[in-house]
Length: 102
Length: 155
Image (tube, rainbow over all chains, first blue to last red; front, side, top):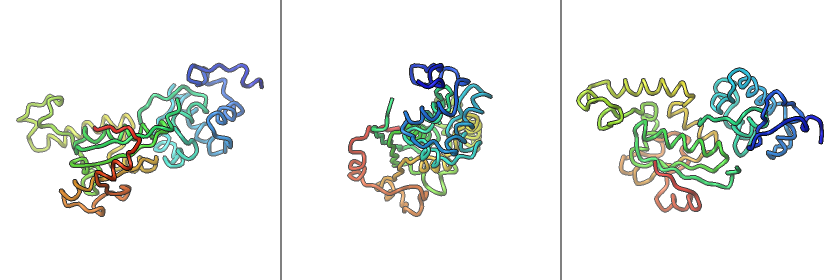
């Protein structure tokens, strides 16, 4: 097992326990688990926006915040992270499961 | 848990703020979980998708005991507007969009929005009167065809 996976711990739902143990390599592996085999720079832009806000507030942004504040159109978020963009993006970003309803 | 095989249909029949929002939030939440979501607006619920009404959805201050406003006061001019304004302020803080923007967001998220034919006829509405994101006007039969294996929620 590669070193970047070996040392990290996940919670029961597969979210990273410590967001500081995140790396782009890990994100790639987690993305593949979510069915995203080509993690593009655009994916990473969303991921870094989530990580930035999580570091600041301790909570992943809602999808609407990603659109309104960070400028990623709703449609694109659904295209980038099909089948549940809020949770998938947060998981790949290595932050805790989002609890927003919007 | 993977919810992607699930399908949900939500019927909205009321035109007040508290009648419409639960339907919008449930539909959007379903899409966020990867489920298919369909919204069916009927009766007064049509206000949520009618072009000249959707920006002016209000909370009812009369006949609404949970507002804790005496009926006589609730009926004063401007009360409903004031209560709506206050509620929207709280909703803004929680990132909840206004109805027109919510409908746009739902469409972008891939939720399907439909109107009830019978209610449209009753209110003399044409599809032109509805927001452009409404995918179609359905009869009851067509509604059942579309909701075939979906779970149906009536708000």
